Image (tube, rainbow, N blue to C red; front, side, top):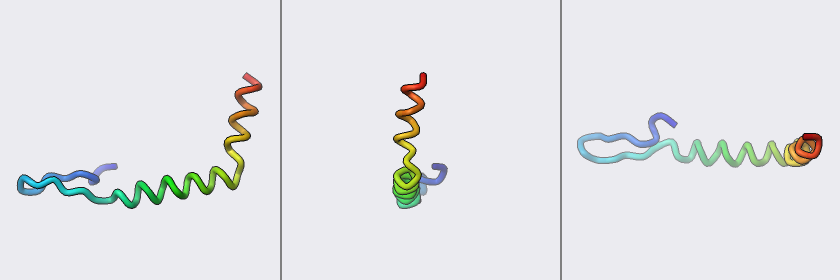
Length: 47
């Protein structure tokens, strides 16, 4: 997250936000593929 907002000469610059979006998308796809939600449900029932 470091480097997403920078102040340069009184201006606020943003960057690397696409990296965060890409990580969220990849995490969602991987989670769907391995069925992580079902695992959490089973764990919750076990508790």
